[in-house]
Image (cartoon, rainbow, N blue to C red; front, side):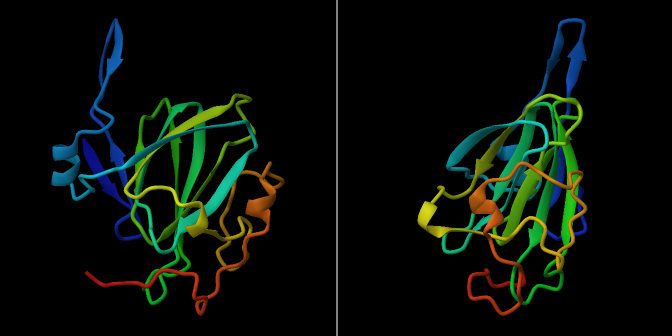
Length: 188
């Protein structure tokens, strides 16, 4: 496997080694020792599976007291996946990176705790996309927080202008440096 750094320290793209022949293909979508050797967590406690229709946008989500690291991959279709650094005091506070994850490219994105996460299914091709992601912490509804998807201070270049989005996601606040609902940056 190959681990590709992004512009946000700790957020990495994982490109698994794929073995293809006339029968099809096989690859390891996760192997604890190999991922740990690459600096990724050895322990994930929850796997999630999401199916979204074209034009759907989910996010930007995070947990405050029980932050989640996420290892994301697409098993059907494609998504525009985004990580936003929301750690107060971080040198990259408010910056974002995106990557196309698809069933075809088999890439994964690891987003460490302290970042907001969101993704959207492009309106084309007209197929639903299915995303699977591993989490380093359990989902805690009472701890869930978010940022509004179209926050002009973040200015994400989403591939949709009028996404299908939940009422909850529409109601999230904008990113502000002084919010008590953001994680703190801790230099390593």
